[in-house]
Length: 342
Image 1 (cartoon, rainbow, N blue to C red):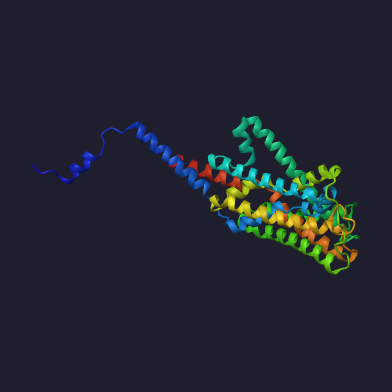
Image 2 (image 1 turned 120 degrees about the vertical axis):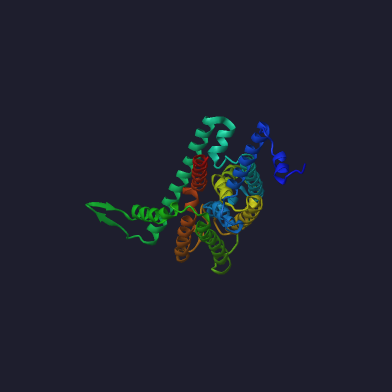
């Protein structure tokens, strides 16, 4: 008796479905879903470098010469020690997020480690820090604009708004549209402006010292033990960008390149910090902000550059978790659609 082709096909199909095999297939499907979710970023590694540089090269670049003058030349070693520690902890964040695709933000890490109480504690500390840093940026930019335009002020409905308060309001309105952008690729151009401002500040300090008659005449001290705590605190402030790292990781298209991006960012920032510290320390009578050593005629450039720098950096501090939350909403929406389809 001849066997028909469809008989061979029917023999290959089991009459009873193996439950263990079905469960394994579901797990594989979940893994594939999580993999597609973790790979859903759209920002290139090149643009992520600008975000990382902008987050790291913050206001600390202005005060790091004062930190070196407080601690002495040997305290510069602490700068590289703190930089190495900050880089390593950044890699630990990446490792945590690689182990569990549900970890998208800093509070997620706190919840995974210590439960719901850990999530609440980390959230309170992180958002308090970001709120205070953002407030500090607004105050700094308000002061700078007040110095640039001392006679600025308006009166609305009988209420007089001074120049400094009006400057803060104007800067807040300028920064506000960046909060509504979810595309980190577009925001990379704003981060590039912040990086450019840091480069301009560094070049201007070198130019004024070399060609404007200020010179690099200070010899400095080898070590000042009483100033080490001040130096350490200011050095640590230069690398306090960790709340932004989860957002940078989740926004990347090629997440396996995150460690390379971190290496490049920390090397470039450490070089710029060390250069600024040395150039500023060699100036006569180093002040708390290195740009205060400039001539009055050069401070206009300093103030304008500071405003560009703070504006370019503020968007990273205001919205560190928006990209991750947006991806989480997309994941939940896609899951609901799959459930409806089933």
